[in-house]
Amino acid sequence: MLLRNDLLHYPQPSARTVRVLWIDPGQRHAYVYDVAARSAEVELVQLPALLADLRDGRASVLPADPYLMVVSQEMLPPKYLQLRARAWDIIAPLVAQEPDIYDARQRGQMIARATAEHQVSHPTIYRYLRRYWQRGQTPNALLPDYCNSGGKGKVRQSSEGVKRGRPRKNGADDGPGLNADEDIRRIFRVAIARYAASHDKFSRLGAYQQMLDEFFIERRIDPVSGRVQTAPQRRAAMLPTFGQFNYWLDHDDDRPPEVARRSSGSGSRAGSGIMADAAPALRATALSAPGRPGASYQLDAMRADVQLVSRADREQAIGRPHIYVVQDDYSRLITGVHVGLGPANWPQAMLALANCAADKQRYSQQYGRRIEAGQWPGRHLPDTLFVAAPLAALAGAEWGDGGTLRTNFNLRCVTADHGPGDWQEVLARRFRLLAPEVAHAANGANALVVGAPCRLDGVLDVAQFTRIVIDCILYYNHRQPAPDTAAPATLWDWGVEHRGGALKTYPEHLVRCSLMPVATAMVSCDGIAFANSSYTCARAVQERWYERVRQRGGWQVRVAHDPSNLDTVYLLDAAAPMQFHACHLADATGVRRQLSAAEMAHLPPAAATSAPADAIIRTSATALVSFAG
Image (cartoon, rainbow, N blue to C red):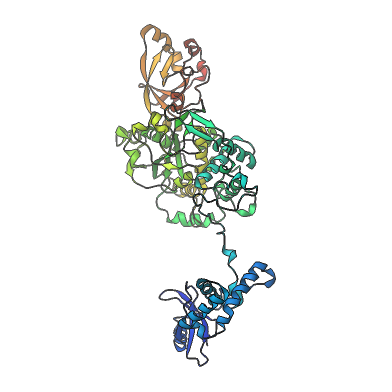
């Protein structure tokens, strides 16, 4: 037996639910209404047909009414009651006229009279009727839906020239304020990471004030000289508020570990470790994932759209960095990274691969990030390296069976177009990412003007930038991308334990030195001259190279070097290919210490002057050791 207000659910052919609005006293027909309808159209159906649908299983009566509005009157705000009373006064005379209100023609005439009487529009009355029929035909069905307003948990899009959110409390003199769009939120994230890296104790207010001082001032970079020119900006309308800064700090889940939420109830940090439900996700992922750790890696590179400055002169821009990333195919773990300046090239990509064999704990410590040994696992080289096509085209003679990777490590390279990696989404939350720049014209001054101006330009140096990249990698490696998917680090550890018998390991210094770019240096009486600098090593001192140069003249030698840090280069010995003699920078002033090749290229001539020859010769040989295999 069907009753008024019953809900009938039809699963086929397309799921729909109808409400019985009225039943003919003679049990011949009924009016029903689709609760998901966007109009106020009511259907007239034969009652025996509805009963037949129930009897044959084509429809079922819902045991509970999810649309019925049953609330406590005492809990309703006065405004809600006023709105409900207003709507009920308008439609109460209409819905009382059954079954005439269900006939489309008569309903139109009734609504026309009601609009004239109450001075409301036709759509308003139709909206009231639709809500009344959807929600159980009670006055409470007309309560406003303010509880659904605001899009709780959703990020609302901003419009050009329109300030999102409430007006400022301190009056109109300060202007409407600034929308925190994605570019502003990138600045928030970078400022938070930058402050956390340089202070023992994190202060929200301190981070906010440092951000305003560094990123929200007028700054431009001269396209010819690369000099950073700044001027204070005091327009409050162009500055984000501390409230905005705090809100987005708590909203994001990839904060540095030094930064805690203000409220513990707002959720746990996704990147701080393995989530509580990671065990079932690990079992599901591990059993379905083919392959094993270290079977194949992917090598790709992206350019960050941010101008870095020199550590020797923070008013000198040195270009946009490339981020080279190596990722394990099986676990998606990032196993190696390198940040390089200048156009994308194969030697710097190989330094990212060399980082795969490095001690990540020591590597992170170089940039001020202290981690446990297990936080960034992986010190292995793969069997196969899938290289993104733009990088593979730069390999030259190193590609193929005669290259260093194949001959030294039996590592096969394959060109692959694997598309953007999911790691790029994490980095893109800090910096806009661009395609790699491989053209030779990108070098020099031209590299300083590529891309749109950004507030991040002219603030970070390469070490600070690398520290932020490391934080992003640690977050990515421990992030659980979905509830039913294990974090990359967790899956890697499981794979090493259960499928890791074929992993390949090599001494870190041999991998690094053999994959570094090789260049020619000149032995002179002032030392080993390379990149406008002088170096010395234990072998040169012991064999009295500098005295021999004064008698016989200089000669050329081959050195391996890391363009990101020219403190040390490695002398190659043709008679002992497994030996790499460490040659240290002989800089008596210390001006050139811990600088990259790009930073040294921008040093003024006075700072480029080499140390005197006698200072080099007197260098203590006990501190100058060689890497010997």
